[in-house]
Image 1 (tube, rainbow, N blue to C red):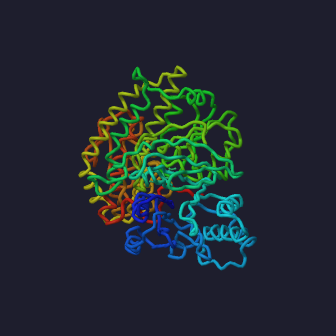
Image 2 (spheres, rainbow, N blue to C red):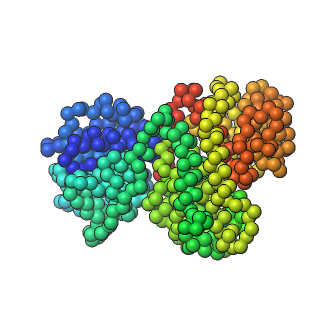
Image 3 (cartoon, protein in one colour):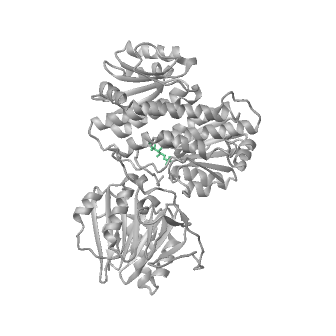
Length: 600
Ligand code: F6R
């Protein structure tokens, strides 16, 4: 959701900015723009739609060696030329890009700049006009920028150019992500290290409400009182090829295929030198002390949490609740005496989940974030972090993060069980190795999933996914995958629940994809399939070796029954991918969606 890049150095900024914005496309956006400053002037180019449009629009002769760029996902005001960033102050002295939402922008506008005519509907334009207002009062740019930062309420990542200063990008953030990249004779800013990984892998984290002056040969970080803050840089462990599609047509397909490798990395990352599963003992202690775990997450991460609950309860023996973050924050249940909060988030930036973390931290409760992004907001603000090691996930539809989240939750439950002397009856390491092999088998069978997508979904308007027990959780994820990229209305249901109302929607030819990987409910889910078939549904059953029956559409290799979500979901990810592909849709960037949802 929205992305920022910036460059200051001796090269032509335009190309570096456009390349950086392309790397941020995956976050979701509906317009984009850049501003570059040459010796005389700041040139702003903006376009509604894709970066390719912006490339076409931007003048090849733009020459500046300083610039900022932005992809916008509309929050205040529709996607349009006027509302896209960068925004300029009335005199065009100041130019600004902004991610986030300013809560008090109307109040600030009415207090300080009631006379100023605004040309957009955005909160961002108010910020840039405020900088000009304070500069006109006699402050220098750093003072004016600092003053504005002290007035803003809400979330922001900001990059500001001053047309009277060719040597500085003024930068600040609050709640929204922003990094400074350190180069040789140049420096950059980016919402995500991936955007600038082609030019540098050295980054400095920024903390909320710091004022950062980014210049060609130095980066100065100050607190709001003007004191210099020293900060070491770190090397982002991203391979430049992670940002490329390689031999795949889409990032989503690449990421589905990367799941066996991600599993292997996870198994390795959570093993000690003796080859036993292990993790930070402070995390194990916090889980042991908890009388209840609250898993907080959104979307696919929430679905992974539903599976993780089974491990934490069955293996680690801790009662666990799973909550959708956007609901929990406004409707908190009665908490237990010693809760532990586990935040699951691929991006580590989801505003809904962060809002809960802020509340639970205020209440003094311990927290653990499970995320794919080291240094992300949820990781920095929680007491502990467990990394997913899945590698950057770029397609909007989450695939490898889901399986990585489930694997890490399984490992967490297992190490806590061991620390408590609880017998789980599962030798997790070899079982995860089997899971990895099973995922490989399914990925190799991709043409069969393509056939299922063609047979069952090519012309479907709606579809149902059903399952019982763990298969129910996976059906929710299967339905989400299908709807978000193919726009087929899809719902996941508990097999036994359909007949309590939803079965009324089944008509001749309605596709129903049923999961049958759990022995204790194998007969009952098949009974549910018979019920929908009797009402005209076209069933497709995905079962597991040992539980299969004649006529099943696909049989996944046998794995431990509690680990089937890691395997059965691969079939649904591939089926969704091919369903969208055959409808000629933009698989990696589905409409209306953003990869990292940084507004509540
Ligand atoms: C679906 C999807 C979303 C995310 C959700 C939470 O494919 O990607 O449902 O799972 O927006 O995002 P994170 O995990 O980054 O907190």
